[in-house]
Length: 303
Length: 258
Ligand SMILES: Cc1cc2nc3c(=O)[nH]c(=O)nc-3n(C[C@H](O)[C@H](O)[C@H](O)COP(=O)(O)OP(=O)(O)OC[C@H]3O[C@@H](n4cnc5c(N)ncnc54)[C@H](O)[C@@H]3O)c2cc1C
Ligand SMILES: Cc1cc2nc3c(=O)[nH]c(=O)nc-3n(C[C@H](O)[C@H](O)[C@H](O)COP(=O)(O)OP(=O)(O)OC[C@H]3O[C@@H](n4cnc5c(N)ncnc54)[C@H](O)[C@@H]3O)c2cc1C
Image 1 (tube, each protein chain N blue to C red):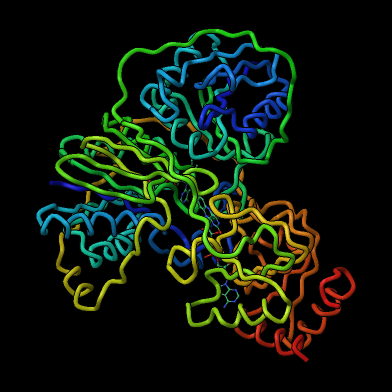
Image 2 (image 1 turned 135 degrees about the vertical axis):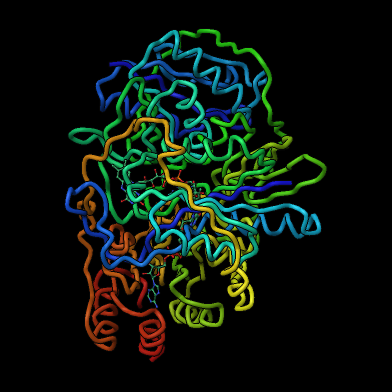
């Protein structure tokens, strides 16, 4: 069994999570080779074959060319699996590669399962097992699902080229907006989610944070709807925090939110839905209406 | 200008999901359905563009699914789309993302859309494949995970969102397909007069057999709740009692309440 792993580079550097691809290959007991559109400096610590295409020529985001580069490597390696991470790079490129190869794609794989691959569905509340028909199979892996593995060694480099021109023009990166408090240093964070209901209810969350001596954070919809500043957002596209206590108020526990707070020391979730996925990481799940429970908790703590 | 917006109807994610009789997907009984959240941003962006261009573009909505999906396109029509296509498929759930994409592409092929908006993923299956696969089938340029959109004279400039909140700016010519990420805009709530107006807008029904030419590449094996690994405490019951129990636990297990 052979897996062609698609590494990722940003600003000329290998993204650390690319090592999760080796973790997957090793769990599968698969032989591996990697494709990297990057620079020499970005080569992974890995003794196998790396097909290196020059990011100076092909860009870091030029999906029309990148899909052909991957295709060229597939033709040489004839892999059973073409494996991406389920990231902004992977979910953008993988379906294009699948279309080109006329191959099945399973997205956001979290585990190998009997009869196929396990993946989340219904906003992480449920799991499904899917069986691909045909080869090669294109996969994207959920971040963190397969532990990173650094194989070590010096890669055997193979040049990789593709013809033609891309239809999109990449104009550059823009750093994330960071305004407001630095939540990464907070010892206690009380975060508001969409379950808080409306902007007018936010003071209730702020008051709990105040009696606890903590800061206020937020899930993404709360920021997207303009109730709170972008700096308050916790998650993959916001801040990654690890306070001693994290209180999630009306937050469902989407993987993108969990990625930003699951390393917290102690997690309390307040949610009216007992099955909300936040329950997977919470030390205590209070099944209640936020607007009833939080004021009652604040009042008792203030005494 | 002609714009297409792909709209999927999905269950409310606060629902309780149970496996269907075959045990491969959810049973639909007792589920309330709504427009996929990401697709609301797609509809809004199309309507904003129509407004920017003085009302000239025609916006078509398309949804593949059983009769219930007409509710979803009605909402989009009330938000400002002009017409809708319902690809009627009582077994939409037996189609994989690739088949759904080929159905959409088969419809769009002859229509000459300048721009297609889709969500970046659906809330239920969430494979983030359909939009890109439609673009590939039609030979359109495509950018995913878009959080900012501008259009001028046949050129689209977008920002796509990367990990850590970093953004990448990308430019391309139409025809193009954009997959919309949360926060791209502020989807409007349909007003009552617009809901009334939407009732008179055209919904063209096409049987799926006319558009489907592809075999499935994925087979569903099983649908189930994840194995609980957390093992955290669950507090139910009266609020006053929950408060006391939580404070007790915090005193016991953390050093924050001193
Ligand atoms: C690429 C990408 C990046 C993302 N990045 C982030 C990120 O950085 N951070 C982030 O947070 N999200 C991010 N998201 C969005 C994420 O997928 C979810 O949509 C989001 O986290 C949901 O926020 P929520 O839990 O507040 O809302 P919902 O998912 O709508 O959940 C609301 C919860 O509140 C509960 N509830 C409702 N009413 C009440 C009540 N009265 N009392 C108690 N509970 C109630 C419900 O049961 C539900 O569980 C990203 C998504 C994508 C695709
Ligand atoms: C055996 C089997 C059984 C299944 N059973 C069910 C079921 O019972 N119910 C169910 O809902 N799903 C079911 N599915 C999944 C369903 O077919 C997928 O939802 C579909 O293939 C679309 O994939 P996605 O939701 O992952 O799309 P994504 O790629 O995540 O969606 C991205 C975007 O594509 C567009 N889009 C996606 N689907 C449609 C659509 N139908 N119409 C218009 N635009 C669309 C939207 O703009 C959406 O935001 C089943 C799949 C299989 C293989």
